[in-house]
Every structure is written in structure tokens, then in C-alpha cells.
Image 1 (cartoon, rainbow over the protein chains, first blue to last red):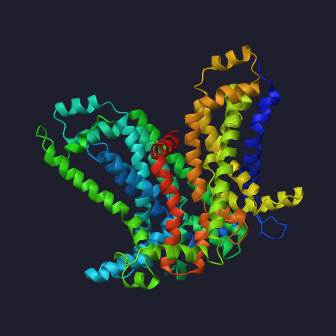
Image 2 (image 1 turned 90 degrees about the vertical axis):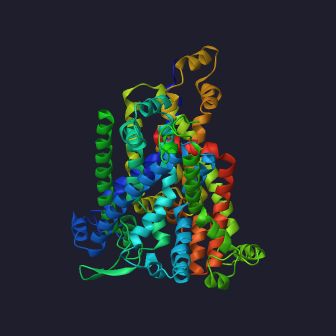
Image 3 (image 1 turned 135 degrees about the vertical axis):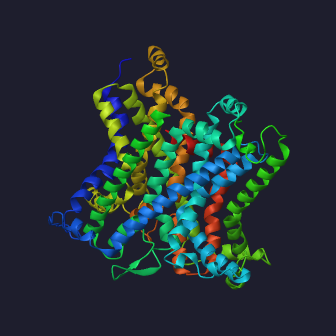
Length: 296
Length: 299
């Protein structure tokens, strides 16, 4: 077929133009701004080299945000996938109402993190505290999101509730792609339930794990909405003898550095570091998982 | 349906009849399901209470369901946040962005697939590679750049519908092109060649032959982008501003919760209002939504 070049160019143009204007140019500007004294207002910016980068690694809040983001990501990757996988096993069995269960587990995923954050803030601060008082459970009497030792876990709990159903559906799709005869054969050969899951199911689902681990890793690392409305970074605590906010994940730290402290260039430098770490983590994860896929 | 039924075997010795174990499993799953639904129930129950009643007991059954309507009216009549306006704006922004993303991504993906040259591969790879760029790296320069562009062309991009739709096209097209690219590759060339021989122009071939074939893939693209755009918070906040003329539901909910601190009756009712459209949509299009989101992830 003879194609007209100018028509193809016209077809590519709208996306390419928007893409360049919305991602490529701001991305390049962002990297440039991170090495200047940009303050968001003054059009004249001066080159400061790597000064913005040096500062952040001695800033208690950034170090703490970094550490809890790693912790939060690790907890979520484990929790969401275990819950999602277990739910997938349940809803692919011969349960009568399995389709209703699937839909129910999946629904929280459709509601935005902003709205969910408020709902769970209410649950943690009012419902659970009330229940703790009525039932005499001391652990619940002080809100779990107002204590620095439980706040990250509380956020992970909400994230798991929100995200496990989605991950479950990916596992379900993968399980349904495995021929039932293989499982039956193993069963006839005397393999129990857990050995069938471990030796047959999990290896055959290797490519699904690459996807789910990638999704949970990147989504937890980039978490903002839920963090913003559930805890808004609180409660306060001391770290390296400075007052800091104990549940302020990296994405929120970047946002607040710019919005509350008006340190645009520093926020941009943090964002660049954030980007580099995210790329390293996700590439490593995909590489390791792909290797596993080949082994299986 | 799946042939896989190992989970059903969990609680029963092999070879035995399947009822007792399966019933136990059904009960466990049912309890888990109910546990997952509790937050929604709590929102509904407390949306039908006054602030006092909530403080008194956040888990009790409401005494008067008419209070739910009262709370809705209070929210709609609230002077500082135009809730209905935000709803309309959210619909407008989501619908137009989706139309623009679907059409332009399909055009772009088709042109890239059908030109098997080095340049088309490079463009495609750039689109795909950009998917790893997190929003946080581009958000502040984006606002600055939109301001500069708007001032230059004398046509503001910040605080406007076209500005945010343009931004959504930029952010949404990478993944959409990626998904559509994968599907278009599987469409046999012969189909389009036959159309050309019959005298169909390139543009008409696309709109009359290719677009109808893309329909299942469009559903995936629309659902993935639709849920993201409808729930998105940071981009509207930065492009539209928290007090601008154009608002979206997530912006209205935060503005509302910010001005009615701890007034849980109203905050939860506003959360309920924000959730209803999506849940209704889900009830009607459940199969497509689940399929769309899973396929989007797997590709």
C-alpha cells in the first residue's frame, strides 16, 4: 500500500505535540531547574550546580521520608501481594458467590485515594477509637494514625484494602490461563494443596508476578493522595534532634517542600532523586523477575 | 469459568466429598467480603446522621434516613464549594479528555505501526520509555511552562478546560499508544490493502476499517484513563488551582473537608456523593471495567 507521508505526520502530530509539551519539555526544564536557584516566580535563574542535591541528604525530614517510603513500599509489596494472591485462590475455587466476591474485593480500587483517605481517617479516628472504648481494647483507644509507631502500618492497611482486589484480578486472569488438567494430574499424583500451589501454580504464574510486583512497587513508592488526606504527614516526632513529620512519604515531602516552604529548586532536586531511585528500583525488579520467568 | 479448584481443596482431605470444606471456605470468603465492604457501609450509615449523632456513636444505625437528604442539601447549598459545578466540570473534563486521548492515540499508533521504519520505532520507544517518568518530576516545571506558553500565545492554559485536556492528552497518550500499538500490529495488512485497492483513501481506511476493529481495545483505553482522570487530584490542583473557576470532584472534596474540619456528617456525605457515580458505573459495566483494567496492566 502506498502511504502518504504527510498524512502519517498529521496523524502522529497531536500526540507527539502534547507529549513533548507536557512531558519532554517539563522534564528537561525540571532537570535544569534542579541545578539552579529557581524560586517559581523570578524568571531569571542562576546556575548553582549540585548544591540543591547536597543539602537534602543532611535534612532530617528528607532522610526520614526516604526511610519510611522504603519501609512503606516493602510492607505494601508483601502485604498486597499475599492478600491479593490468597483472594485470587479463593475466588477461583468453586465457591457459589465467587463472582460477587470478585466484584466486592475489586471495588475499593475504583475510588480515588483522596476520597478513601477521608473515609479511613474517619474510621481510624472515630470508629476504631469508639470500638476500643466500647470493647475495652486499649490498643485502639488512641487513633492508629496519630501514633508514629503505627501510622505507616495503618496506611499500608488502607493501601492493601484498596489495592489487593486489583492485584487479585491480575492473578485470577493468570490462574485461568493455566490448564486445569495440569493441576488435576498433580492432584492425582498425590500432591497436596500447598505443594501444588508452590510447585506448579506459582512457577506458571511467573509473568503475572512480574506485573503485580512492578505495580505494587511503583504505586507504593509514588503514593501521594492517600497520604495527603489520611494523615497529611502527621503525627510530629523528633528525628536527628529535629522536629519532623512521621508519615510524610517522599512524594508528599517533594510537594510540601515546594508548596509550604516555597523551596522550588530544592523540591525539584528531590524530585529528580526520587525519579532516579524509582527507575533503579523498578528496572532491578523487572530484571530479577524476568530472570525468574526464564527459569520457570 | 476456571477449571482450577485447588482452593476448594484447602480444608478437606483429598478424595472426600466436597461439601463440608467448601461450605467452610464459602463462609470464610463471605466474612472477608463483608469486612471489605465495612468502610462503604460506615460511609452510608454516617451520611445519614447529624454531627452530634456521629460523635455519640459512629457505628450505630441511623435513626432517621431523611437526614441523608438534609446533608446532601446542605452540601449543595454550601456557599464556598460549588459541588454540582465540580461534578459537571469533572464529567466535561473526563469525557473530552477520553475522546481526545482515544482518537489521537489510535491515529498515532496506527501511523507508527504501518510505517515500519527506524524513525517510527524510535518515536514509539520514546513514548514507552516516558512511562517511567513519575508525575512528581514534571509537575512544577509543567505549571511554569504552561504559564509561559499561555502568555506567549495569549491564550491561557492554566485554569481552563482546554489546558487540562491538553495535559491529560500528554500524560495519557503514552500508555494508550502502547496498548493500541500492540493491538494494531495484529490486524492483517491485507484488510487495509483491499480497502485501498477498492479506492479507499488512507484517512477513510483508518476511520472506516481500522477504528471499528479497535473497539475492544478502546474499552481498555477508556477505562484505564477514565478511572485515573476521574480520581486524579494533583494535576487538576496544579493546572486548575484549588480556588479556580473550573473544579473537579476530588478538588471539591478536599476544599470541602478543609473548610468543614471534622464535620464528619458533611465530609462523609460528600465522599458518598463522590463515590456513587463510579459505583453505579461499575455495577453496569463491571465486566468491561475489570477486563479493561486487567488487560491494561498485563500489556
